[in-house]
View 1 (tube, rainbow, N blue to C red):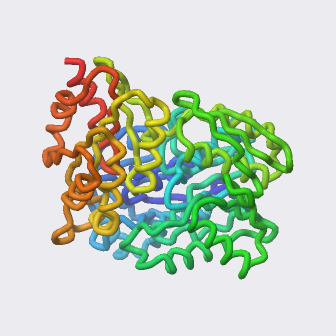
View 2 (cartoon, one colour):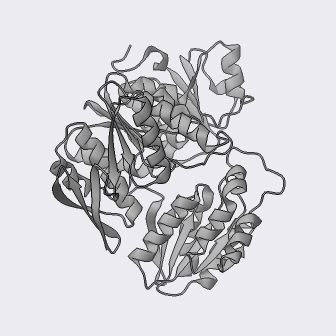
Length: 464
C-alpha cells in the first residue's frame, strides 16, 4: 500500500470526478500515489489536469467505466441512485464511499483546519492555504474553488497541516475531526436538506462537537446566527471558543477596514496589540474572512505577525470577484455569489471599490428550492446595481418546482426600484450587455451555475 493512502482509497473510482470537491480529493490521492479513475458528464480543464497527474478520466457515465478491481466508488450527494456506475458498483459489491468520508480519511494523523459557514468558505480556506504555503509549512488543502495563484483547488503537502472546506449543505461536515474549526456565519440555506434554523443550529453544533480535545472553534462575533451558535456551544461543550469581528466583545477585534481600490487594509486588535495587514481583494466581508484565517492560524500556534504578512500574498479565487478582462473601457468581473447575503456583500464591495462606476449585473439564480425560499431577498439585493439582467434558474441537481421561476426575483427587484431585464436565452446576454454598457461601467456576472461562461463572450462582444 502506498504511504499515506487508506486501503479503501488505493484504486478509487470517482463518479462525477470533475466537481470542485470531488476533483480535489482525486488530485490529492493521485499525488499520494493512488491509482485514481473516474468519470464526468463533460470534458473540462479539470479533467485534463487530472489526466496530467496520472488519473484515468472517462467522459460520460456508463457501467463499463467502473473497473472490476476498483477499491471503492466515491460519490457526492449530487449523484443519483440510478447512475449506471453506482448501479454497477452495487452489482460488483464495490464499497460506495461519500466524498466527505474520503476527505476525512485523508486528514487522518494531520492537524486539520475545517472551514464552515453558509458563505465565505472557499475564500477563507484559500487564504489559509496560500498563507501557510507562503510560510513554508507545505500544507495539504482541499478547496471548493481554484486558487488564482497556484491554479488548483487541492494539493498534497508534506507538512502537518490539512486545510479543508467543510460543506454544511448535506451535513457531510460532521464527518471531520478538526483541531481548529472555523464558522464564518450560520444562515438558513440548502432548503432541500434543512427545514428550519433549528435544524441548521443542530447540524453546526454537531460539527463543533467533533473538534478534537483541546481544539478551538473560531467563530464570527457579528453575524446573528454565529452569535446564537456560540451561545449554544458554550452552554453544551467545553471546546475553546475564540470569536472575531467588529463587536467590542470579540476576542480578535476588527478595528478598521480601509478600502484601497480593489484591495483593503485591515487593522485588528489581538492580545491587546494592533496588527495591520493588506487583503488583496475588495470588500469588508473578505477582510473578515482574512481575520478568520488569521485567528485560526494563531490557534495552531503560528505567530500572528508572520501570518498577517503571508495573508497579503493571497490574490483571490476564481469566481470570487475575479476580473475576467476589460474591453471598450468596460471591466467584466465574475462572482460566485448566489445567496442574498453573498450577493449584497459582493455588490457593496464593488460599490466601495469603484464608487463612480455604473454597475451592471448578469444574475443567474441557482436552484429552484433556494429561489422559492429566498427569491424576494435576491431581488432586493439586485436593487444595489444600476441595472440587472436576470436569467432562468440554473437547476443543478434539482428538478423544477411548479410555479418557481426567475419571475419571483424580477418582481421583487422591480418592487425595490431596480432596473431589471429578463433574458431567457443565455446566448443572447452578451449582445444585450454590449448594448447597455458604456465606457467606465463594471459588468458583474453572478451566480453558482454556468453564468461564468458569459464573461469572455461579453468581452468579445464589447471588443467587436
